[in-house]
Picture 1: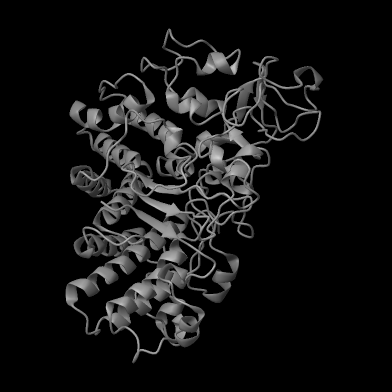
Picture 2 (picture 1 turned 45 degrees about the horizontal axis):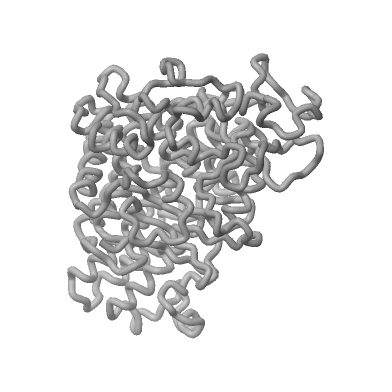
Length: 544
């Protein structure tokens, strides 16, 4: 089956090979309805700019100091950031919300498409495929917003200057989810079973539906909103559809990081949906530079969650060698650990590890914690200039689908050993970790641990903690590697307390204070200017 990649250039329309003349003739806000919407190519062309709007910041983003899915983990307890942002410190405010998405451009453009295409003289099933694309994109955009605010206005038509929806208040979470679910269900019903490159197909629709349904079901369960079972069952059903398709599989003999350090994910059976970066098309990111000289590293808390190869935790396993050095720490451990963080003499790292606070000054490669992230590092990209990397970004991996299935069934209380074998144990086989034997008392925690280490630095962890109502974990001290002379370059030159902060056990420690307010930090505040423009909007609970 052909895998899907998203190609984004500065021009939203380059996806279709359209030229500036097209833009001059048919600006999207002033399309000539008499000359447009008349054939499938019109719909494909219009939808391409919808794809671009939704995915512009997905994957590895647009370069610079942000790398989308990689740097998104800086909000979470996976990352030891040199300079944590306001959200991570718990000091964001209504004037500086930290995360915000009150842009309704994509929703407006989808609604314009839906209204104009209704009467188009195009074969019905083909027309419905393009409607399905647009409605899936609207569902994704809406759920991104719902995660931030908890309630939203439902904008289901193109607004005129005197439309009452311009000054509508928010609808309830139940009403918004019904709206989103309607779009998702329509997409699954009408999406093609296979599609041209760069377009959604039915498996993609099921994958996004599974992701959203799991998030919503667990959020409702742990935030005591009710109604979680229907969402969790829907997550199971969509994940099962993908698993039954036969189009994807885990390469249990493959190297973990080889999947990520890849300039071409097309045709990869472990990837359901990806964003394509391509030198020939001048589609770039900045991942390599951000890995080599990052302002972030991994945390001790994350590293401790990787099991030993016998399937036991570091607290339980006789195979654990301790953490006096990083070599000891990585011995007999889950192979994903060494595929996510560098040891001396691996990847681009020399004989010792350099810290960002090195008293000798700036060095080529460093991290603040000692756990230098190497996931997504491709040797072929090492010498690329700033903003000139072009490895592909796996937006949905088959591993995530397996984890969605396992988590949803665990939360429903009906997971079996057979379910564990075809999901978690597939991932463990690749990581050379012993199989998980189902224990109903610990299975939810087991799945969460597996999800954390499998998807580390892919941008999931913060949202996971929010949906599980585990924000308190974000207040814990942030620790790095045990400070030791074997691993740390210029060890003897550090002045403890000035160049570096250590805790009582000798671990590198952030000097920042982390906070999380349970009364409000599970959501984000609406932009203040939007409240001024529409007095019927209600500020997010806890932020008023």
